[in-house]
Length: 157
Ligand SMILES: [Zn+2]
Image 1: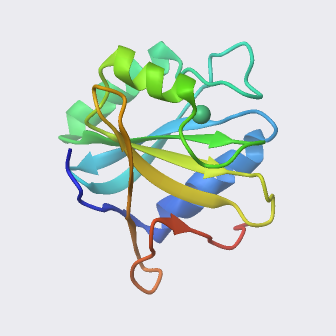
Image 2: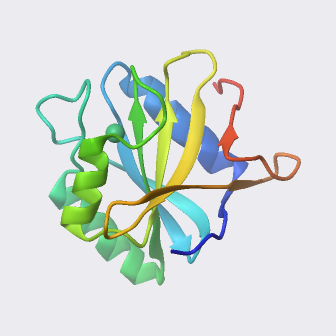
C-alpha cells in the first residue's frame, strides 16, 4: 500500500465539508478526481442507500457518469469521500467490507466527521484488499502547508 499523502487544494476540502453540511443528518458521498495522489476536482454522487443517516452507497449510475467524465479528461479516481454525521471519521466495518468487496482499494477513502458540527474533521485512509485500514496524511495546498493525519478546518460558508 502506498504511503503517499493525499494532496488536494484547500478548495476541495471546503467543497467536501460544504457537501457534508448540506446533507446533514444524512451521509453525503462523492469522488475526488485527478492523478495519482493529487486530487484536483470533486464530483458529488448521490447516496443511494435507504438508510442515509448511517449508511451510504454511491449511486451506480452517478459513478458511471463520473467515470466517463473522468476518462474524457484523462483523470483517475483519486479518492472516495463520505461523511459520518454521528460518528468519528474512521471507516466503519461496513465501509471496509464495501471497499474490499467492490475491489476499489486503489483510491484513498476520505471521511468527513460532523460529530462536532462547528469543527468538521477530515481524515484520509487507504483500505487494503485484505481490509487493513491505514490512515494517510493529507497535504492541503493553499492552507499554509501540511496538516498531520487529521485536519480541523474552520466551517466554510
Ligand atoms: Zn462510513
